[in-house]
Image 1 (spheres, rainbow, N blue to C red):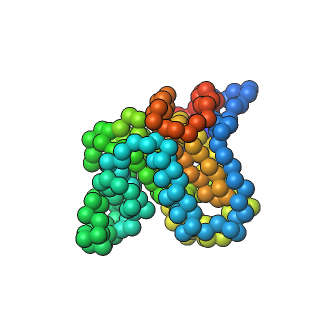
Image 2 (cartoon, rainbow, N blue to C red):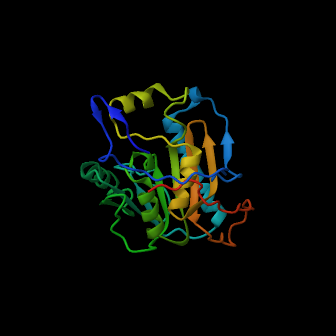
Image 3 (tube, rainbow, N blue to C red):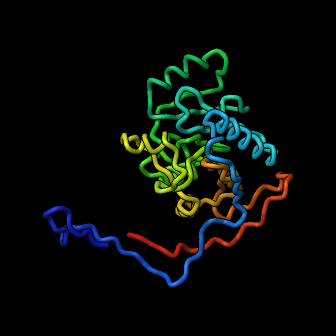
Amino acid sequence: VLLGQDGPIWHEGGARRIYVQVSASWNSAVLADWLTLHRLPETYDYRIDHEVGCVFVKEELARRRQPLRHVLEVGGCCNPMTWDLPGELVSTDIDVQTLQVGALHFATTKPNIKFVAADALKQPFADGVFDCAVLFSTLHHLLDPVGCLREMRRVVRPGGFLAILCEPIGSYRAETLSTEFRRDLEEGINEQIFTDEEYARMFDAAGLVATRAVIDGGSFKAILCRDGAVLSTDITSTAPARLPRRKPVVDTE
């Protein structure tokens, strides 16, 4: 790919070259068991969707029937959505002021919640110290979502899981793109929206696979585990058979 003319200037030698491998055939990286619920866009409600996300996480914990000791929530500001889960909760965010508000608010009612200022791409924790990591409407705000996924994979123990919840899904060019989301984009707010294919490619790049994934209207929720990890025998419900991972057909540099 070589940029062409920009006004009176021609970009030639100084342009960025992106090398692309083109294949005659293409296979989707989206697994066949991803569930799509055809919810009408006008019924989408941010608060209710977050409540549904909380239920999504608790369902996964019920399936696993394993003790939950250490939970990480990234991007929860002063009000982490996982505040009522058992065990110790560490809530990280880059906004120090809102973290201070959260620490004051939960100081007496929930002393098991710790608030830590940290970059989502560089968490100050050792490898594998958390049973699970949870992100509510966080991934799409980050400049390097794959880097964040890799960092979550690092801090979650083998056999644990990562939940990404209430993430926008679709296309910038979709006719159903909400007025609010389009306004945020036009105002320069760091919002992104990904298709199901892009989510699947990012998971693959981070060495993760979605064992549960639901597209509910404009909201995407998924439970991610390490690629190749075997689900615990303590899980009582029958998990769908995993499809073979497909090698991406487009590689860029």
